[in-house]
Amino acid sequence: MKIRIANHDDAAAVASLIMNAAATQLKDDFTIAGWKLFKDLVAEETQRVLIDNERYQYFLAITESNDRQNDQIIGVISIKENYHLFHLFVSPDWQKKGIGKQLWFNFLSFLEENIDHKVPQNQGPFITVNSSTLAIPFYTKLGFVKSQPKQTKKGVTFTPMTFSLK
Image (cartoon, rainbow, N blue to C red; front, top):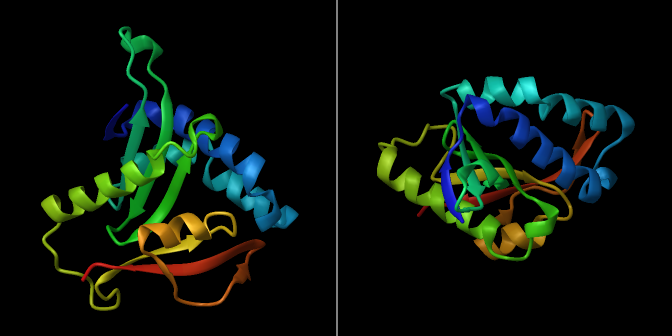
């Protein structure tokens, strides 16, 4: 497996991976309206726009084969404005193999090497995530802590969590 930065041409595969993982694992966190909103957010065209947007960083976990044509995207992490974990999804067939953790640590390395460490005043020295119910134990193992109680907005249920950069 290798990790690389996503590009414009990866949008369809990223959208497909996220929808595949979410459809099997996250439906209970959405009302009908919330699920529609989520589907629009992870649609191919939206992902293409976000991948091309400098406010977002996308990293992909990819299988490596002798024939690069057969390489497959098996995980994605995206960060908004360097301090909000926007997406972290691993293909259901590849979960529980450390891929999500590798994507996370790759992002932390990227942050350490490429960001000038001028954290926005309103952000504080931490990274935020709005965790699905299913992902809370995973984020807790990475060092995130719940920062607010579970909430529902626009039909999407999530728990705000933070990771300290100190």
